[in-house]
Image (cartoon, rainbow, N blue to C red):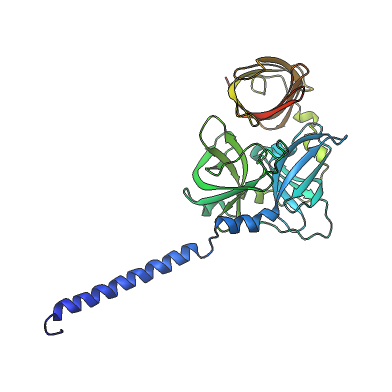
Length: 364
């Protein structure tokens, strides 16, 4: 055989040897890239015990809202969104874990309204919590797989939605010019109640805090990079929950056209009935105390217009929290104005019917 095919056999051997080298190199490269990666069931199993549902109540125990959060230290520091805890009348809150354990939130450790982040402290002396590791923003790339865990629409339905897991990819890294930060755009679905939930990379690191969904598009969801949480960890003093909603004299809004006053237009969407429509909101801050009048016009739903009153508080440079309500119809509107956008939620009560949803408005 060597006499008949001396050259062909030699070339064949070299070709096989080269192929084996290429295959081995590819396997080594693949192993280096995926050796620390975990599948979605593993990520969900390992991370879910660190994710909480946050319930907010007033001094009488009446529920004011709900959101999500996740543990980042063994002694019970929990990251969430600023807009989750920045609720008028907040006096007490608790964090519920997926295993049924519940802990009171002792107070606020740190807040950053401009980046919509807050760190709260659980009242659980001596408890060793399972904490998630914070990932680095710089190591993540567009197209990478991510997993979101939170409590969307928790408490709205009779079915528990705590520690809901969804997966997707990083579909973009976007500039948020009004706040001079970067944010992740993701395809992992989130809903109202997911605010403050964790965004994980395939290695199980917390790389983001889910906070917003564009309701006018298809699966457009956003998370704040966990890198911004690191700068908040230096704070250690625990402040009362109510302090996050207390505006100092210097923080009270002034009457000017650059504040929260003005006309806003956009869309609203019900999180209970799947209905959406157009919204137009005219806000007027009448004095330095923050007392606010507003008139709203809606399409696509039962309520077509309403006169609302309430308060606006300036919580940072070009950042305002607005809390408004009307007696008839019983409509409660709240949200945060940043750089000319009004993002928030609403509650509507009529007899035995309760509707909840989101707003996404822009200043004209």
